[in-house]
Length: 203
Image (cartoon, rainbow, N blue to C red; front, side, top):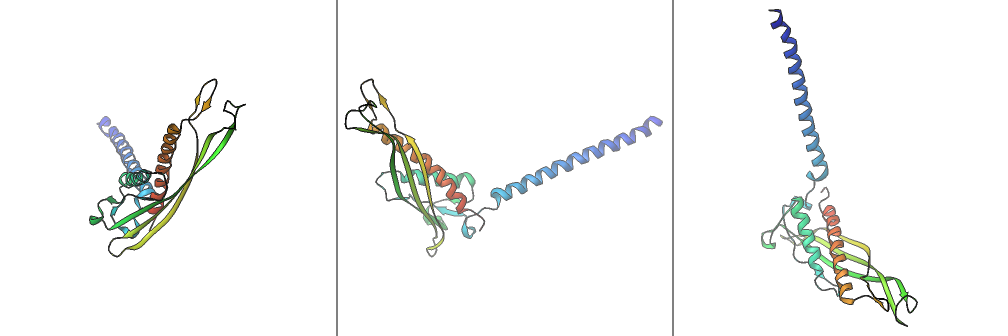
């Protein structure tokens, strides 16, 4: 009989410990939910709209095709964060219009021959700095009202591809063109991540 009575405190102790564990678990889940809401849960498109069209950006530069980098990067951000569903303009409540306004290339770290392995009277640019500018605006399809607009810029330096021989150091123009486009694609992804965050700030 005494053994049976003695087991009651142990049962109560186990129940209390179990209750505390459950309470701690519930609190953890609540805190996680609050943290999510504070981070991205309270983000939305301006006006609270849920469907958005993203047509191919306009390109005012001489670099053909780079507009697709920006368009695709923005669509990926919207689909990844699921704040707005990307759809056709006919089915969307709002449309995001973007324009790649300018790309500037500034040469740097220039070497001059022949002491640098470059032919006489020749110059070789070992680096370029790329400066990009993009403008965007969100338009309500029902009345073409502009709900949001912003401009973004980014700068990045890259080294030109080098082809070296004992007699000659040069850079192949085709390789350099490819390197430019690779860097622009990376910059587009970074810019559109920033633009998405600005677009979906608390409205």
